[in-house]
Image (cartoon, rainbow, N blue to C red; front, side, top):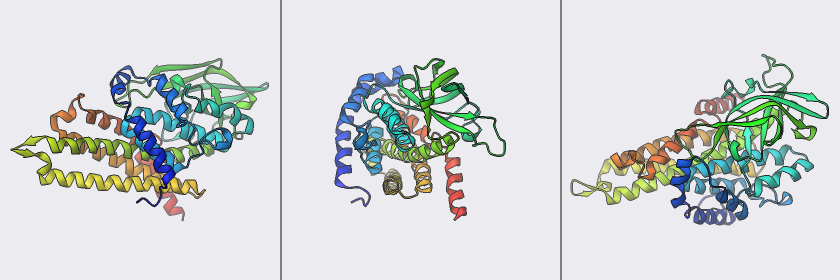
Length: 382
């Protein structure tokens, strides 16, 4: 029994788990190519997965944050690259428009996150502003009945096949004493004049998840591109990241869970010194510790999601879940590789890919160091 999960959430997760089980044969080619197959994104749209976080009044499923966390766990257990794209689209981007968008913006943009034609992008990071997000340099200025935006974003998930991106830019001059002042959010169609996509990054893991630069050179958008109020962008970004951290925790749980499942099955079959290696106490204890940590990480993620569903503060809990689960995933995937020995280092075994894919979870949506800052700040402010 899980105190945070009801029957509806279990049913949704179970349906996604069944669908995800059909993906195995397609993963190697897509990872090699470095792109998610468009027909799979379209199928996720038809299944309702892309719209599950969007309220029913806006055409979505209106599912809970708990249900979304469970679905991301299942997608990550099957294919982390796909889960990352869904997490950004249906988590950060959708939630930002639902919470801060006007009725007209919701009507215009939310269907594009649900129809499966692409996956939305969230453009915050720049070459000189990663953990220090408030120091971003992209600029926006009013011009006539719209805005002109200039700058370059880096490491943008889904950029190559996104219909639009939420772009954070600064209106006015940088104030060194209030670096977040003036940061403003815009919904930018990626076919707008002046918008281009840089080369895809060559990543250590998550290779089928596109990560590219987003370049705006005197890009023009209409007045209705403004999301929320002028100067509210940093609040919008941090709100999106709070929810995104629950998603990263869920992804970490899925990655670790599947790596340990593969390691456990291998340990039962692999024989050394005349018996299965699962009989050796050192290995058994390592699996026991990893599985205990996995269960703790899942509960932390679901607690944060449960708080979000009830409209209660969850910033600290999301940071705790992301920190613990992502670092747990490092230990779990390392253990899985070690249990498989030489085979764990070979691409013929999926454990190698899960170890590479899981490495990013301690970095994006705020590094482990940033999560510790968020947690400590909350604790000491009490």
